[in-house]
Image 1: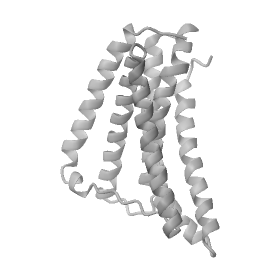
Image 2 (image 1 turned 90 degrees about the vertical axis):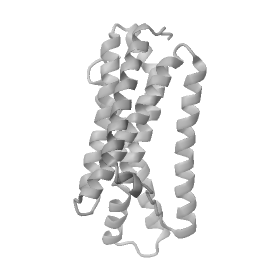
Image 3 (image 1 turned 135 degrees about the horizontal axis):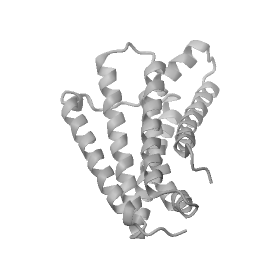
Image 4 (image 1 turned 180 degrees about the vertical axis):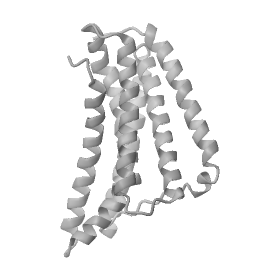
Length: 219
């Protein structure tokens, strides 16, 4: 079992999944178009490797959190890894995934580095961190109440399925994907929402650790 820097490998898995999905999307768009130049490829990269990229990485990270608490993390504890180290690695994976995806989104957006774009990036980053923390708390509680683990898996799978289906239908119909983010009203009070998501994440992490310290671990 890999005990050291396991968070790094799991974060890399999330980012590779994001890159693979967006790479397949780029190939599909290239096949769909009769003429596909480097300029059009850059446009696709700017459109889908920015905010959609961090959203995809965050959702994959949330799904990975559930799977890790269901399988890998109990096994690591049985091999001698402490619960504190396991929990710290999970927090490091969540932060590393979103931070790296945010950096990639910033440099690959192709937009001016405006305050509005940075606000959107921060908003989605904190929202996805909050989502991952919800999944983590439910997964830890699911160690005792198995139904919660199933509910969280179904919810995240439903989100992924809805997003993929929405993108596929838009692609089939228009040969392009137009992802609109209706959050302009939210961004007017972005500091308030950022504080809410950050405080909620801190509380969820606190309660997750309290539950995880005494959770029954089954292999």
